[in-house]
Each structure stands twice: as structure tokens, then as C-alpha cells.
Length: 345
Image 1 (cartoon, rainbow, N blue to C red):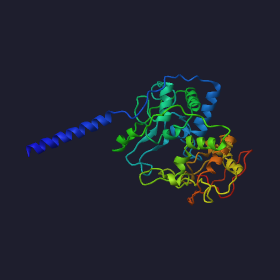
Image 2 (image 1 turned 180 degrees about the horizontal axis):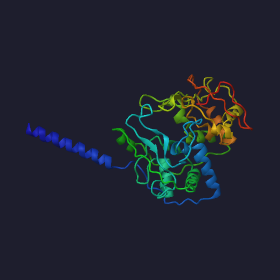
Image 3 (image 1 turned 60 degrees about the vertical axis):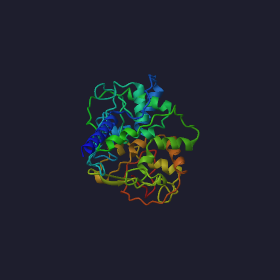
């Protein structure tokens, strides 16, 4: 019996020691680049466009106006936190506290003390300044597709922001997810090329990837993993005590999705939200949407058209999605009213 007890104790020590060692380990990572990005007017302008209208950093890293359409960013612009932290108020997030960090150049609470290389590595490879894993709600697996020039542009723009001193609530993850998160980051194998701007489908695929369209518009399984064979079919559920339950739209070419909508109609659907009035429109949270129409409305016609061209190439999937009624949106002077029946989710 004594030998058995000794064996059990020894086994427990090995298990505990192994767990402690795993907790102390860093995720898979490569050293951050030593590059200091040259900030040019062109890069800053491109970075502003990407951060605010394509990558939608503003939507997670800012406070939100809870009474305005699409819950647009408000006061603490990119200062972290946000009014819609992922926590027990979100269905399936019991035991979690996930608030987006401050990404302004504040040295104490933001990224002011980070190198350019550390910022680029965090955005595309999912590890912070200290080499610790970011959680997957930060869509670094999609941002990994950002080209070298575009990630430099993002850094250039972030460096121009006014520093905001705002300490965000610490992350809380339930076990075993606090351990699994270490396995998620993957270092880039090398430089990432930019798509051919003259290849509309390739450009659209790039924009739909870094714009996180797949992640929102693809249903998930019981373990919250995307179902690849249902890509872009919609029906992904988002439930929160503030806005109730919202389902993402089907954006495949099936008649229950984009159907026979033309390229011009697709662009007009977004541009209808470009008016100043749309940005101040009040709406009840339970009639609202998480679809960031106001940000995407400022994308160029070329980029929106490219996304359309790409989506027309994905397999059509039948999926009727429960839609919230589209509110009457003040129309921008150059936009056309979307076809009746189109949704704003």
C-alpha cells in the first residue's frame, strides 16, 4: 500500500509539475520584426481606411453608442473596453470576461511602449508584446492575410492617434480554455503578398477575409467552430442582454442569400448608409443590428464591387435566415434605396 501511495504522489507531482510548466510556456511565436515603419501620408491614409472601414478595429476597441443604428463607436475611440465586452451578458460566454484592449499610443495603458514589429506581430500572429497569446475574438487568423504594405499602413495610422489613458478590465477565461488559448497563435511563414488590384475576385477575397465576413456569416457547431461547408450561409447567432438575438445574413449567391442582386444593387445597399443622418439615427436596441453598415458604407465602390465579385464565386447554399425588419434609413444623395426585402443584419 505504501508503494502505491508513493506512486500516486509521484504521479500527481508529475501532473502538477507538467501543468505548471505548460502554464508558464509561451505560445508558438517568432521574434517581432525590428523594423521601424516609415510613416508617409499615403500609408497613414491607407491605414485610416483599413482600421475604420475594412478591419473594423473601431467596433471592438471603442465604446459604442447603444441607442444608435449599428451601435457605432462613440467617445473612447480605440481606447479599449467598449460597451459590448464579451462576458456573461453574451450567450455562451458564461465565465468569460473579454474586453478589447486600448490600442492608442498611450505608453501606460495602450500600445505606446510597443515597437512597430510587436504591433504587426500582434495583429497578424496573435501574441502581445510579452509573447502571450491573444484570444481568438481578435481575428488575427484572418488578419494574417494582411499584406506587408497594409500592415505597415495600419501601424502608421495607429501611431497618429491621440494617446488615451484607459486601463481595460483584465481577461478572464474558464479552464481549460485558458490553457488551450496558448495553442492558437501560429507564426507567419514569411512575407504576405498583396492581391493583384486588377483581379477583382482576388481583391474581393482578400477584403472579405481581412474584413472578417466569413467569421460572422458562417454558422458554427456546438463547439463554436465554423462549419466550412456552410461558409457564408449565415445563421450565426449573436445573443446579448442589450440587443436580444441576431442572426447573420446568408450572403451566398443562393436565392435565399444574395440571389440575383446585381453588382450595382449590392454596392447601393452599403452606400445607402453613407448619409450623415444614418450616423445619428436612433433605434431601440432590440431592433438594432451588429452589421457595421455605417463603417462599410465608406468603403470604395471598387472594393465593395470586388467583394461582390468574390461572393458570386462561392457555392450557393440554401438557408432562410430570420431577419429583423430593416429600418427606414435616410438615403445618401448619391445612393439608391436598396431593393425591398434586403436585410440589414
